Length: 123
Ligand SMILES: N[C@@H](CCC(=O)N[C@@H](CS)C(=O)NCC(=O)O)C(=O)O
Ligand code: FES
Image (cartoon, rainbow, N blue to C red; front, side, top):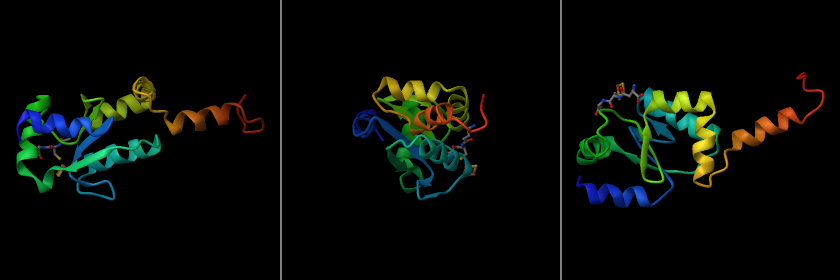
């Protein structure tokens, strides 16, 4: 798939995921991990199933110069695959990156509620 076609896909949503399968039924553990992470943050995103489109499967790897699927894009920029998303999730960087593009992570609200909730066992 040519670069300009991919750019069109990237413009459709702030968060775009290229994966194997669909969010409701990922076809690979790596794609599933990314879906689970985004779900935890309550992020709305576009997803594209590369297993249904061989030219997309190859095209997206050339576009990002990244050899594997899944691939997550925020504001049209390649962010990473499964390992990077997991790291960013664990470090808190993902919340920050989402915030930068005006997406408020649901996980942030949950953390705040915990801190502000007396009797939750936290000191
Ligand atoms: N370590 C990778 C795991 C993803 C991965 O290894 N994907 C492989 C197997 S699903 C892949 O896309 N291979 C090329 C292909 O299937 O086109 C990550 O962080 O995303
Ligand atoms: S499809 Fe086999 S590891 Fe992803």
